Amino acid sequence: MRLVVLSLALVLNAFSGGLPPVTEGDFVARNFAFASGETMPELKLHYRTLGRAQRDAAGVVRNAVLIMHGTGGDSTQFLRSEFAQELFGPGQPLDATKYFIILRDGIGHGQSGKPSDGLRAKFPRYGYRDMVTADHRLLTEGLGVNHLRLVMGTSMGGMHTWVWGEMHPEFMDALMPLASLPVQLAGRNRAWRRVMTEGIRTDPEWQGGNYQTQPRSLRTAAGLLYFMASNPALRQAEAPTREAADTALDAFVANYLKTGDANDLLYAVEASSDYDPNPGLEKISAPLLAVNSADDLINPPELGILEREIKRVKNGRAIVLPFSPETRGHGTHTVAGLWKGELEALLRQSKK
Image (tube, rainbow, N blue to C red; front, side, top):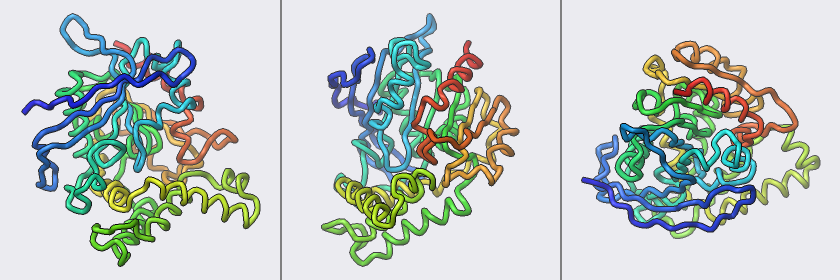
């Protein structure tokens, strides 16, 4: 059954520097089937776009770019100046007067369908392949996009980029996963996620997902996010004393608790359980550039995984940005000024 666009609203342009207005809308996938066997009669997918789609003589969209956010995030993170002005402005690599930029809220995130909307623990269990399937439906059935110039993502969105390359290898001209590895989550990356999710599930205040107020375990989960998201040098500079460190952590947790939800976080973290692009890396045919940073605690370069596995990608290349005063650990993925030159090279390489 065809999807139905529920709403489209032009958002006032909040940017300087000549960026076009952001178009914001909702899109409903009817009878959405999850890999778990569960279905939803209506799955809402929220999105934001900049620019307009351009088609060639055969009706193929040639300028669409899909950019996907990380765990617990949403599409608004790509509208901050450190990302949008560096990439979407006039003369920038993804100039929004030339490209059709698609920023979506993934399942369970932002304004898309998620447990906290009302279903709580009755919301279907979703995985990364479900999220990619939903995005494909959003593009093809909702926005009328039948081809992507570029698929790009940060953290969880980076992992989705690898999955896109395998599930739909002919759908895009290029791929750029940031802050991710093309293997299932194991080692420390698996361990810290399990500590977080088990802390929520075993908390008596969670009440099987039917809590009336947020369980205290959400505070611990927020603390883990604070710990993993940056690098030690930045944390030390920001908080050089015991009191300053306590204040910084307390402020982060308090801010997270203003909008965070235990079920939403639990589902989002556990969604990674089906992630394992490794067996199918040879299926990826479009040019791919993977970008990580040397100070990323979640994907540490000393593992050597990226350098080893990129050799199996036919048109693949990988770089690890060196530690510098400008890098931000795992969060380097949204500091576009550090890697936009590599993006420009990828676009030149994949130009058709």
